[in-house]
Length: 182
Image: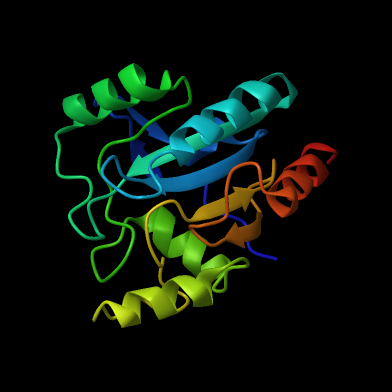
């Protein structure tokens, strides 16, 4: 069992500083996002999850990242506008965040250390990348945009889902429901 440090510093997309501890007590779905990715429509499903479970102490935390295919090249202002206009996002968005490699944010270092392997269709995605001449990340690194980490109310990393796992995937919904019961 691995609990995330409450002292991890975060920066909202509007520049406001906070710590991970300010979200303690809620069930969190931490997702690295991108606005120019084939998986970008997941923003809509993530917003639906956020609204569906918010009154039960659930939050989606979105971390835009330009780590994969230059699919998040915009400024924080452009990202915030894109999300508001296209998906009416109300869940917290954070500043652009490195989620893989030597410069990854401490949150992602802790997440990948706590849950080094993901569930869901990761191998299929890796195979497609290889077919296109790309070298995909192997676990424990984040594979691509829209990878999801489920964090319990106490900060324990409960589950990790591959990027292609849709927000309405039954396994993800079941894990969220179980976490909300505790």
